Image (cartoon, rainbow, N blue to C red):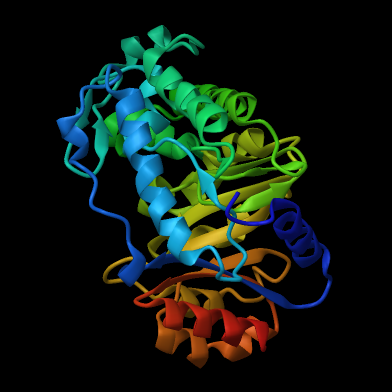
Amino acid sequence: MFRDIDMLADRARKFYADPNPAASIQIRGISELSPETMPPLNSFSFPADMEKYLELRAKNLEKYWERRAKLDDDIFPSIGPWYGIAEHTSFLGGEVDYTPDTSYNHTICPEWDDVAKLKLDPENPRLKMVTDGIKYYRENWGDKFVPKLRGADGPSDIINIVRGNEMFYDVYDEPEKIKALVDFSADAARFYLEAQKAAAGKVAGGYVTGFDIWLDGDSIGQVSEDASCMMSPDIFEELFLDGLKKTCAGFDAVMIHVHSLGKVMLPLFVTVPQIKVIEISNDPNADRCFDVWRQYEKTLADKVVIMTPTAEELRANADIIKRNKCLIWYYAKTLAEAEDAVKFIRGL
């Protein structure tokens, strides 16, 4: 194993439990140590080439970790399957297109009559690509990496694929049908995540989420809420918030992924008690994540907030980092820059 997993878990527990402001840092990438470019995703034939693809990814990641293993940040050496974004919904059906660097799930139910055909099938081949991929890594690469979850879409994102962009008309034309589909989509998200958890097993008493965040106990992540940024808070609260609450219900902790463009949803997201960690991504032509955090600092006061700054932003925002609970995601050009960022956070 490239890192001491128990040490990292103990460090994370102390970070989460500390009632005082605290900062943690994960070096998410180092350009000069980057692994070799993978063959295009659409050059593989799935599911037949699944193990071939997984093995190439693991060997690539192994080379990267061999070069950065001594870096004392807070990231776990974890690995999980990744076939693009389609797997978050393709276990419900629909065609999948692979591109060189991701995948897309076609609209599953262009007609409302098709919704009744949706089912949660544990033998669905797209689902098994994810769960069997997690098992493959756990069984074949467990001496180097801990297994991580793939994560899931929240109900609004699932419905955006089930119904396509008709969803944004449905919220006005068919609100009762949307409510029923939200309820099903929450069940679908939980079904998908529970299947992943069963495949991965616990790591040091918790789970490593799809975005490499370790959470203690019976916890999940990431849950993505991307489509929410394209609707009003009133619509989300009326039709989708209960589904998000149902998705998260009963878990010890949940990590959620949101976009800076959808910052107006943050006051609603924080009402879900299980959501302990919120990642606010940077979007083009929108406020930077730190700008959003400053606008909503009081709203997010009892959450762990994930920020992805540049080198300049990291230092320019030391004040807000020092007075809150923050996890920094940092992308460095060189190992020396990564070490300097870790040193900076440790010194706050």
